Each structure stands twice: as C-alpha cells, then as structure tokens.
Image 1: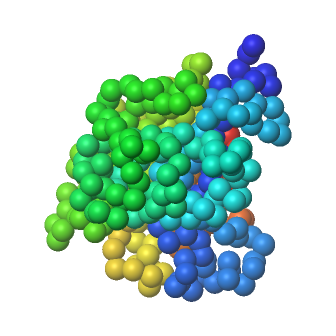
Image 2: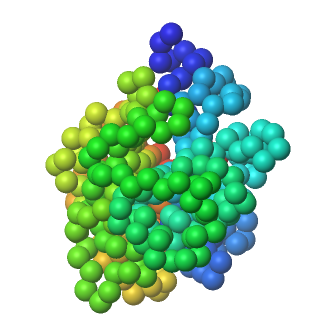
Length: 314
C-alpha cells in the first residue's frame, strides 16, 4: 500500500515544543510570556520538548496497540501523557512506551525519566557519555536495571527500536549540559554529549535535532534526504535574551544557532527536507506569536512552528 494511504510507516506526536522552562516559563514575564499569562489567543502554551514515535498501522483518528518510542523525557512528561491518549495505559500496568532515546543529558531531556519509575519496563538508549552522566547521579537508580535496561549507542551506527523502527544517532555541534559545561565550554564541539537522531521505517525518514550550534555539511546532507526535519528553533535572533533582559547569554553561547539572519536556520536549511518544523522554542522567541513579523518570516521560508499535540504522519 502506498505511503500516502491510510497506513503510514511512521507516526510522530509532538509532546512538547518549548525549550527548557516551557512556555510561559514559570518565573518569566518577558513580552512573549506576558501574552501567554494574559491568555492572548495569538500564543499557545507549550511544554518542554519531547516527541513520541510509532511505526504502527494507524488511521486518521487512532493508533493501534503498537509500541511507542519517546525521544527525550522532558520534566513535563506526565502532563504530556495525560494529553496524549495513545500513550496512556492499555491494561493494568501496561504502558505503550517501550523505549526512551536520549539526545543529551540536559535536565529538560532527562528529568521525565523519574516519572517512569514505577517498575514499568522499557529500554533506555543513549550515547555512552549521556548514560555515564545518568549513572553518576544516583537518583536515576530508581529505574531498576532489571526493568529498564540501558543500552549505549555509538553515533553513526544503526540500531533497532521497538516496532520495527531503525534509528541512528549522529554528532551535532553543541556543548555539554549546562550543569557540566564549566567556565569555557567548547561551543561547537562534536561529541556524544549532543546528538541528533534519524528514525527510519519503510523508506520514511524523520530527523530530530533539538539543539545545534551550527549546520555541518554532513548534517545538511542527512537533512536533504529526510522527509521531515524537526530542528532547533530556540531563539530567533542571537541576542534575543539579552535584548529582552531575560538573560546574559547569546544563543550561540548556549549552543544554539539563531533562526533568523544570513547565517541562521532559515538560510542554512533552505531547500532541505520535504517538511521543516522548528522545535525547542524558547519563551522569549517571537515566532511563538501567531502573526508576528518573525512568525511570518518563518512561514514565508517554508517552515512550521511546532505545537504540543501536533501529529506528523510519514
């Protein structure tokens, strides 16, 4: 049956689309957050970034009992499961979540693992560096090894995930998690502390990169072959947080290339992939405001802005 039929080879749910802290951020009253606090219909609240993927046969309204893979486990995971019926229990202590893959060890990528601590079995995948970071923090020992086995993945090597999904982690320029970075982090290092993931099934390809300091030729080549790309949309301009008086660091200092500008994401990804969606969006980013000049620029360039609850079918 063709890929445009009712039976798709990959289905992805955007569980959360915001950067660390969510939107609106609990302690922020910047210009964009202020609109959300006031209930302005031009902005939609978003939880912290995570996606769920399945290769199960599905129709327009429901997903069958195929397993799901989470890519990152955000601090908002319980709320995200409540908002996503396909991830809710299918029997007594029977969750469809069969695996979690981590693209890094940041708090907003790993804290949700603690939500999954009630001895529900699933596989935990990540690079050796990321899994070592978890192992060094004994709070994650609540995920018992006999129930949640950990598998270290070498970037560049294909591996199998539940439901017949083939995956590959790959190095992305970036930095170590904030709590590990030190005084002089290498902002464009390519290490296993920051990776992207490509998911494949029946010829469909989805690439997820929530944090990127720059676009390398190797990554650009990978994106060109993808059907859907979910890419770092943290800040629209490099000095956005400074201009908003919401922080003292530029986006590049935090390991994120800006969306706009001659060397930003819109320019770098032009013509790559069939569908391009910005994700991991900071609370200060004006692309969160429907109809804003920045949002119009993103849409005119052929990009979408991720929202919680979006469903992507390949």
